[in-house]
Image (cartoon, rainbow, N blue to C red):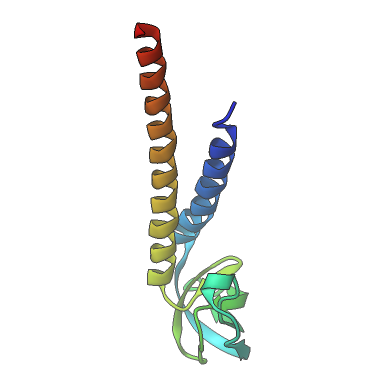
Length: 128
């Protein structure tokens, strides 16, 4: 019963990385066609990444819009975007997947380590 919080937290981590992986697989390089304002307040550490609001055009002619995360962006710039999301560069999204994935793997290692320690302790007590 004590490992349930670990599994819940691990599920949340994998859900978060799943969204980023989905964005990586569905996104494409697009041209920014309009910028309506940028903010540089906050930092990724406190969950407030800098962004610009704008619109972009996909290769098939569709137009998307919303926040473009990653700092100052100008009309004509190329960004990595999909339906409902945009990033100044694809590398920031890849970095996010790697870091969140590493946290998830680390948490899995902790759960396995605690389980192995418990089983060893239980076996030691049975021998005594």
